[in-house]
Amino acid sequence: MDTRPDPSATPASTPDPAASRKRKLLNMKEATILVVEDNVSNFVLMARMLAYLGIHCEWKTSGYEVVEYAHTLPRVDLILMDIRLPYEDGYEALRKIRTSLYKDIPVIAVTANASQDELNRARAAGFDGFVGKPLDPDRFPDQIRRMLHGEPVWEYS
Image (tube, rainbow, N blue to C red; front, side):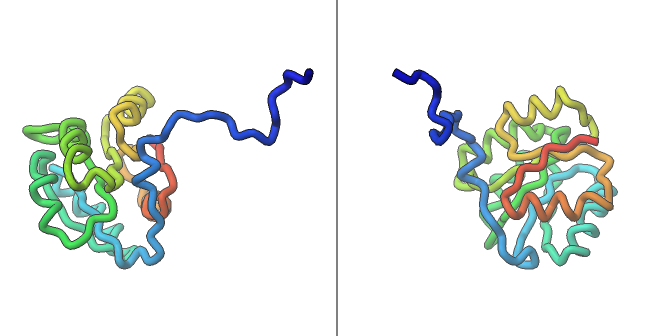
């Protein structure tokens, strides 16, 4: 009797909580990205880079506003969430998003406290990706394209 594993069999894997949120966006110019950022300069930089890509963005300055505000938008394809926010951090805001009607929207952690430990914490918390600040204007457009096409982006340097 042969006890070797069948090479054609698919290995058992743990379910990916983000798998249901992976969607392909055919036309990025139809996308709406909600940027949750309390620093005006950081938001302006993101908004300009997104505008360069032809992507519409909306802005909120704190985590607690996200769930209440998101329902007023006709469409949200991606949320870029700063982790360090006033009143309620990005982790608490993510927990609320995941229990709301917007649980299927991909949420990417964006933080100046970029390290492997913070990336691991964000992954464990259920974020769909991670981008460290300062944002790299040469890499950011590609990161956004990948995110909107359902590809994982976990980068902190």
